[in-house]
Image (cartoon, rainbow, N blue to C red):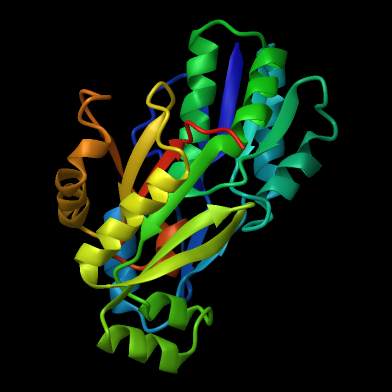
Length: 282
């Protein structure tokens, strides 16, 4: 069997597939440490995030944890492909490779160059390739070739958490709050980039839709995920309704997902995002 191993930054919370293994990232609030998706649900995370004066700390999956899983996969006579959070956002990719040095015949590591629902889209793609019966080598080749087509674009509701994380100044956060600035961000080259800023949610939704169109559109034959941070998907559902023309003739249903602590720590509640494979290769 070909197995897919990923970390909890992929925000897959409903795994019941034998071939998929999800390793938790640790999230620490003060002196309390939790395992993302195991001892800390997404709802619990946002409850603690809102109550806390300081940002939580996220920890990479250690090499020992990967090595334990690799040993079990090899003992079962299987092979594994590891799909990690972007190497530019976490040391998890490096740890996965360190642990794989003694399992080169069993394990290969793929840097998703993405996070959250973008990483999830690549994992879902890998699982589809397994279902189609592709060989281990063919799956690896497809993942490395097609991952560059994944786009993750998101609209933030607040600048507060970017301020807390030191990514913007207090003055910029205050000005943004007073002007109701909603930044649109993306994962580009494995890192977070700001694509634009809008005044208010309506302009923000329009800017988000425009950024999707500029990528060449969505390849609906590939995995496509919409995500939200916080307790409610109300803003996401409004975005879906307002932009029905983007997908109403292409899909019967939309996959939505709650975004957990790895990204939620930095963007806060109220954000919405779209992850998809671009129909236009670059």
